[in-house]
Length: 183
Image (cartoon, rainbow, N blue to C red):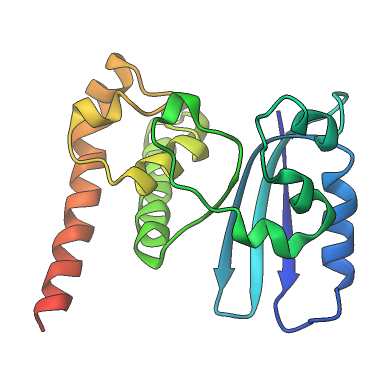
């Protein structure tokens, strides 16, 4: 699996060069996952996980994995509307994900924690937790180690080894949000 990022300006309503490149790219790869987020109401930041050498996205539509993706491959504005919270992580349909501000903060904090762990232990960050696993933890608002077991990439061993620290990071963020809401 490969990963590619795109930055698409929101201010350009006529169809920016970035948007055209993004659409052409979507036509040539088999999508695995797409994550998108609006940054400062100025641009879309899009992360695409894909497979090279497989059939194009339009052929995957026929497999019924992407019921609304035909429009998305033709028009980036449609990608913005294809947001769905997964019901079970292991069988997540491949659709773009737009994070709420709360989810973005959780994801960022989890990545920072993971990168600190990697630097302290000398392990590569992906060996502690993959970005897509951290993304799912942020989206599903994991509260227990048992919840972690539902996340793709988190088995009993990883949940036991890192679960308390991950839950602590999320708990601190949740407490800070509650304090802000009370004031």
